[in-house]
Length: 121
Image (cartoon, rainbow, N blue to C red; front, side):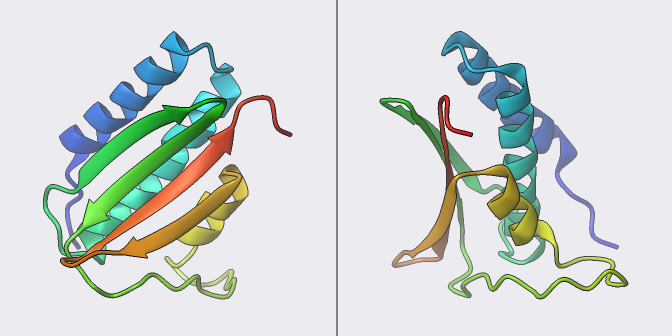
């Protein structure tokens, strides 16, 4: 069993929460963004082989964009829903919690990101 870097997860989620509260976002949107960030960080640790992924939080007009960079060039592939599987639902969760997500290959690794729009249903 692999150990997730829980202090970094807690600090990253707290940083996101603080930024969203200061920007006036609704608590339910904040909670959903925190869950999505947790999934991206877990994927960076477990699949990206990156002990300290770089996280970026940006507010662009009425859009929140959160990015997590890891060192693996392997692009994520959403898995088909399997109710018996122990894992493999992370990207489906991110897609369900956010308005958009994607991946940008980099010279070394990749950046996985998601966006949430303020006021969008």
